[in-house]
Figure 1 (cartoon, rainbow, N blue to C red):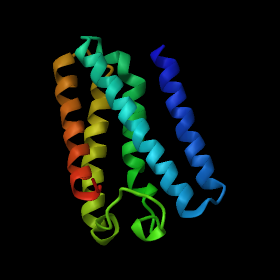
Figure 2: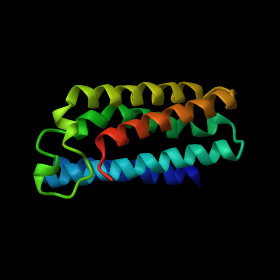
Figure 3: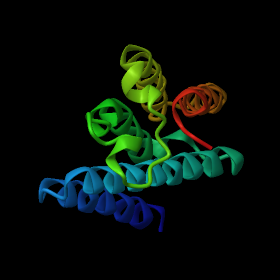
Figure 4: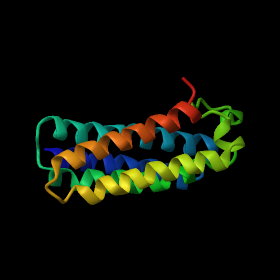
Length: 150
């Protein structure tokens, strides 16, 4: 069942990307990025549920790889012209663009943390995996605190 949910999540990510590729302008980019952010939350929730259930980290290999790929894509889904000035509802603060170096550094920390989680998934160290999930969550929260409006 989880594989089907994960496949559906990835399918939705592809749909969001396809909408943007069709030239929907800032609105398409913002909608795609918002959908992907929600889907990354689904992956994080699935990973956390598996940790709480005491499942083997290997059950989350696919989710962790997908999350790591998304983490590396984050800066690219915030191109110029897709902030509050676009006239499309977005929770991205203007600081994403005015403090681009800080935003990209925060995204890089998230990507590094997600990469490490994906590296741990095939192993058997459930404690290290759970601890790294917390690091990933903290890096998400740090970026959201600085660059996402309430």
